[in-house]
Length: 270
Ligand SMILES: [Zn+2]
Image (cartoon, rainbow, N blue to C red; front, side, top):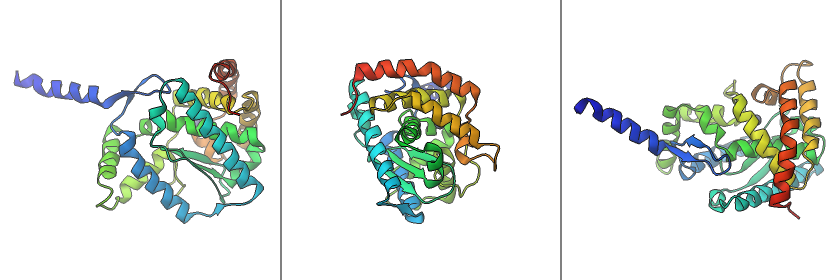
């Protein structure tokens, strides 16, 4: 009898550790809840913003803000349609353009979107920005960052989040978080997303883009430009974590009709 007890406990832990993600409908490993994760996320975001030059007042900065607010509104409208408004209740949306020549962008848990000025020549216009920001928000909504981490690492983050008021975050926790969520480049190699995560973020991102009032067909042009960017002068950071090739672009084309159909059902923002 004794022998089986640990297995029972382990099974119970596994059951508790899973939660249905409202946006993907899938069971996700969820050792850390949003309320545990967000304080760490916001601290890391604030530290990044303090250490980097945020561009404000320019046409580019205004465009990032405009597209970000539309993607936020689209996410809210979509989650409301799915009957999951609660999911976004602790989100504290922000959209910042930072002065950095890296071709990159990311979104931290809780809606903190950062676009690097280096990606603007590739995004080019509002639709290009909506492609990137919609895609990055989708990784956050689907908790893909958590899936980049091991269970032990997640528990460490959760422990730190719960303890945030009294303890200093260790350097290793900061590095784990940065690698999993893509904050900055100071830790070197960022973990890539899996193919299935990429495909999922593409699907949700195209849907958000369509609900936000953009044409998902324009996403193809962005990913083609991103694909062309590698080769000449090395692989951009964004490409190393978001491989863009013929397979991906073919997959995107297949996803577009469904994104448009969903946007028709959900409605688009005004
Ligand atoms: Zn991605």
